[in-house]
Image: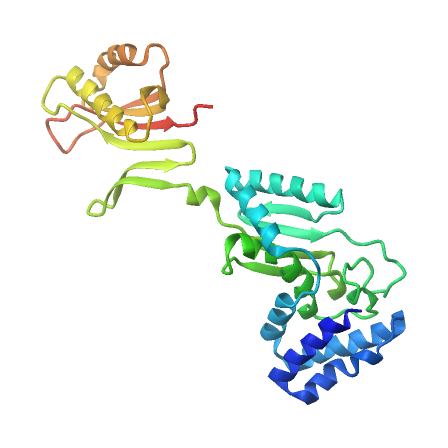
Length: 319
C-alpha cells in the first residue's frame, strides 16, 4: 500500500473539497494495516467517498495524472513515436508496437486490437486468486484487495494514466485516451482506447487545387497518384491530341518523380470512339509492352476543338 502516494492524493482532495472531505475519504492512512481485511475496508471507504463527491471529471483526471506505477513515459513515448514514424500503416505500427512490448514482457504484455484508428489495449488478468473476490486478476496492489465492485474513477490510474501517458508523450497532450472497462467495476477486463493519428488520411496530398472549380488536378493517396483532365494540342488531329494528352500526363507525373511506366490504369475519353485504333498505335510507341489497364468511352466535350482526354492512376512505390 503506497501511503506516500495516498497522502499526495489527500492533499489534492483537501485543496479542492476541504479537510472534512479529506478525512472522510482517507481517514488515518498510517493506521491502515497490511492485511487484506484492513486494506479492503479502507479501499471501500475511499472509493465510495469519491463517488459521494460527485466530481468525476476532476477525480478521474487526478487519478490519471498521479498514477504511482513505475515506468518512464517520456522514454517509452519516444520509442512509440519512432515506431509510428517508421510504419506506413497503423496495422504495421501496431505490429511493431506488439513486438516491442513482447520483448519487454515476454507474453504478459497487454492484448491489443486495432479498430479503424482506435487502439484498444486490455491487460492480461493476474493470477491472484487469494485477493479480494472482486479484485482478482487486477494489477493494482491496492485495488486487488476489494471485495466490492466500485465505480470506474479509481481505474483511470492504471489505464489512462499508466498505459496512456507514453502515448501522450509520443503524440501530444491532445491525443484522445478513453477508459473502457475494468475487472473491479464488474467488467470483463481492464481496457482503454487510444485514438491514434490516422496515417492513411495524413498521407493524402493534393496538387493543382482550383478553388473556383472545387477541383484537384492530382491527388496522392498512399502509393497511388490520381490525375485528371490530361489533354493537349487542341484543334489538331486525333493522333496529335492523344500524344498531347500523354505529354501532359508525363509532365505532371515528373513533378512527383514518376514516368509513364508508373501508370497502372487510365480512362480514355473520345469524341469519336472509333478513334481507338489511333490510341493503340500511340500506346505501343510510348509503353513498349508495359500497358496499363484502361477503359475507353465516347463523350461530348464542352470545347468543340477537343477530341481526346484522359484520366490516369499511377503507382509510385518502386520496391
